[in-house]
Length: 308
Image (cartoon, rainbow, N blue to C red; front, side, top):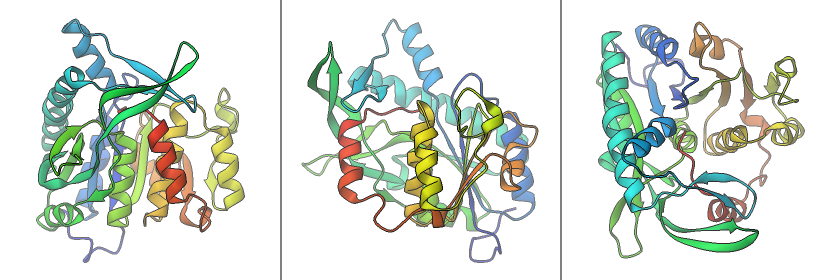
């Protein structure tokens, strides 16, 4: 049974399990059970964009992906898609992952980011996009970036021996004071939680880490410990990996001591990552002022949400 972070000599671990078809969560489930047995506090965060798209297809709804002004492609979550998103993420996938962890003798508790105001931030109802080569504003989006984490809720569950299993949506704050469930990127949700808890963050994906040459696994970047290293990492990260590097920077900037991008399909993915596998990004790679609030806000305004 887990003990509270105050009693443990090791920092908590936040593990983000991807939602892609190529990612098998079985190894991660076994590792969570092992860490819990060793009295390590663990929070699991999961995505599930593939399952959302499959459900949309069965319902005859076309998923919509848009290109931002900065060239990033992400999901546009309208009201109809948001209904499916809530059903699949917080309902089906979260429940299945909790059940699998309980089968592994882990006292898991499923939460969405809305529960207890666990993850909250302003709703982003419009996004800048490129359509037919022209810049446009698309309205009606249901997305947001977590700006507040109810760390006390997670710490209380850990103190009572539970492993929280967290999924989007998050609580989107409306300008009139209302709360609307909205889509949020699962990597950035995990980063927000890791920062709030001072936890190590393990981002599991379908490759071994970040490669200097994205097409060559032999060029794995093992350690990032200086601002210059971080610049090289940012340059190397392409496509979905760019979002993971962004999440890593956010986690480290907000209190996480270490972020690891590692292979979910390794035999012992979390344990191997903590022992040195994958790409390790350390807090001293973040220089003061590297990522200003203005930079972050501009990126959020320009970037559609991905929920993998």
